[in-house]
Length: 295
Image (cartoon, rainbow, N blue to C red):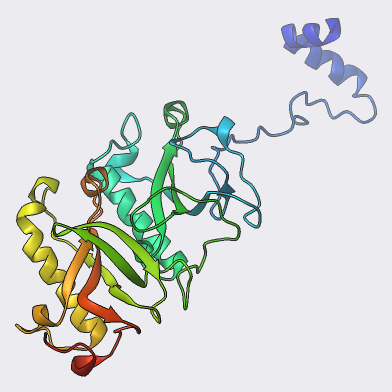
């Protein structure tokens, strides 16, 4: 230690001494060139395709414990994105209802739908977003997670344990896809929708997701007729019947719109269902006017 200190403190003298005596074997006389280069620190970023047993409101590193998707879990991250532009310059992750949050939800919708093979709202699924903690954000983290869970039913958003990845889960004859139902209706209100096979007696069938107009949540009631008309457009396409004045006499409509927090974050996807006042024992997809006559 004393020689090291002397060499640093008396650099000129040390240089003269080395010049006169020569460097020992294996040394080149340069005291700094043999240090390893410093490794550039990198931010933690969660993995796409990771599964989790618990939900996360905030993406704390200490709580990041992914599990094998082949085992029991409740959440799967189907996309990890990166905030950019003005949203990345904020002092904290985007607030609910903000432009940054709406941009994140739009990207999650797009990427998750592609991963699933269909619109996530067309099945028993729920989509949520997770941002870094404020501490990680202050340190430069700008990622966001798009997490998807299987839920109990169209009426009950409670997550249920599952095994296997959700990638491609809505392709083909998926067990998660909304199909036929029997509704419990009281005083013109739908109390519950019970899922049944389309080959058994039923009165309701899912026909698709309608993108509602970009209005405030408080105006949904004022736009109910517009939403019903939007759902009728989907019925016409689904059943292969004319979208004309007779359509409302062929079938009624039931719709489920997003809850207020989701609506404020930009979710405009309305789940549309065809309803008839008689028992059906097959799907009405492509049945035409004979299969869905004016009543």
